[in-house]
Amino acid sequence: MISHFTSSIRPVAREVIRVTSFIENHNWEQSCISISVDSRTATCRIVVTNRVVNIGHSSIGNFASLSNPIERAGTTVQSVSAIVTIKLSLDQRKRKNRSKKHAEERTSEFSLTVDDTERRKPITQTSGTTHHLDQQPDVESNIEVNKTHRDKITWSSKRYIKLELFPHMLGSNPDRLPTSQELDECKNLIGGFKLFNYGKVVIHDKKDRSKIIAVMEFTPFEQLTPNDFANINYVTRFLHSAKQFVNAVGSELRSWGGKMFAIGWRKAMVGFQLIGLYRNKAAVDRSPQAYNSLMKKSERASSILGKLFRRLANVAFADNQEIMNDNSIPSIGQPDFGIPLGEDDCTPNLTFTTDGFFNPPHCDTEDLSEFAFGLFTPVDKNDWSLPDKVPISPTPGRAFVFPDYRCGIDLSKNNAVVKVVWRAKEVRHCTLFAHNPSAYNHLGMSLQINKKTAKTSHDIQSGAIFNRPAYKDKPKDKLYIGNVEHYTKGLL
View 1 (tube, rainbow, N blue to C red):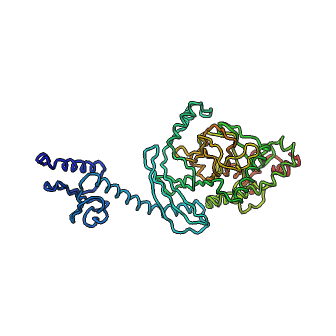
View 2 (view 1 turned 90 degrees about the horizontal axis):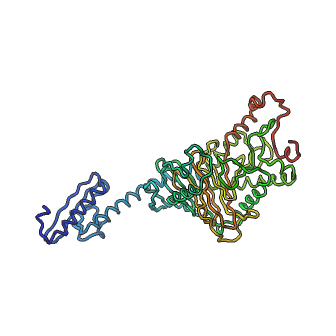
View 3 (view 1 turned 30 degrees about the horizontal axis):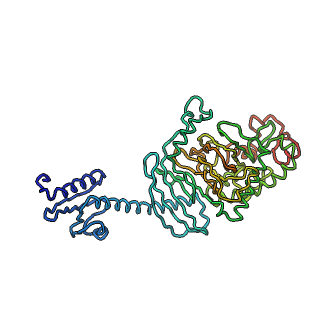
C-alpha cells in the first residue's frame, strides 16, 4: 500500500512507519491500533486502544494540547513526537497511581519501624526516577509527614543483588587488608551507588516493600537545637574520656584501619567472673576515681542516645528494650547488674570508631537485635567536641554503605550529625576507607544487643549459669559480677 503513495504524501508514510515501530518496540500489550491516511490533507489519523487507556473520544480532552486537529473518532497525530508524548504521559499516570497506592502501604510499613508517637497528618507526594547499577529504575518519592517540624521523608526502593566490594574476601585469605589497588577498585564501584546526604530517608527492599533496610536522618549543625547540640556534644566528650579506660578492638574481622572501642557490659573474660564491663585494667587501676567519676556520667550518655534512637525509630527502640527486659540485660548506663532499666535504656554496650576507621562488609550475625542504631559526626581531634563553626573541610570518599543494595550514607561533607537505624543483623554494611585532611576526626558509634551478652544475663537471672561447665565446679561465693565498684576498689 505504501508503495502506491504519491511522492506528496511519502513523508506521512514515513511517520506512520515510525509510529508503528515505536508502538511495537515499546510493548504496548493488549493494544488495538488503527492507522488511516488522508492523502488530500497529508495527515494521518491514529487510534490506539490500550489496556491502560483508550485514546479516543473519551480522552480527547486530556490530550487536546498535544496535537491538532482533534477528531471525534480519535486523535489525529501529525508526527511521531506526539505519540511519544502521549506514551510518556500514560507512563506518568501509571506511576502516579502506583505511587499513590504505595504511599499508603509505605506509611503503614513506616509506622511499624519509624517513630509514630506523634500524630500523622495528611500526606502529599511527588515522584522521581533514578537508576541503579543493575539498570533497574529506583523510584524515590518524597512523602511529607507533618510533625512539629514537618519532616520530609524520601523513600528509596533498592533491589538486592549481592556485590563484592572486595573480591579477595572470597579467596583463601579473606581477612587480609585490601591493597591500594583494591581500595581504588572499590572506590570505582561506589561511584555507581546512591549515597544520601540530606533530609530523612527510608530505604526499603524493592522486591519486599515491607522490608525496611535503613532509616537515616541528616541534621546540619546550624539546624541543631541548642539542647540537641549540647546533648550530642556531651556524648562525644564522654566517649573521648572513656577511650582511655578501654582497649581498642584489634580483630581484622572487625577493623581494617583506624580504631574501634567498646564500653558497657559484655560476657565474662576471666575465670570466676559471670559478667563484666569492658575495661583496660591497668588504666582503671592507675586512676580509679577518675574512672568512677566517668562511669557516673554514662547514665546520662545512655539516656541521650536512647532518646535519639526512639525519636528516629521508636518501634525498633521498643523491640530492643523488650529484649533487654526479657533477658535481664543491664544497660550501658548502669553500674551494676540487676538494676531496673530506665525509660531510655536500650543497649548493654556501645561501640565507637575513630581515626579513619574502615572495615570489611559484614552482617552482625552475633546480634540478637534485628536493628542497630548508629550516629556519625565530625568532632574536634583534640577533645571530640562538636564543631563550633561551619563549614569545615570535607573528607572525600567517606561513607557508610550497604553494598548489596548499592546505596548508603555520604559522610564526606562533614556538615551534619547523621543518625541511622539499619537492619544490621541481616544486611551487609561497612565503613569505607578515606584519607582525612581535615582538622576534625570522624566519630561513629552504634548500639546493638549481642547474643552472648543476652544469654549470659538471662542465665544469671535464672540461675542456669551455675550449671555451665565453666562454673558448676566452682564455689558460688567465689563467683562475682564485674561491676564498677569491684573495679574501682581494686577487688579484681
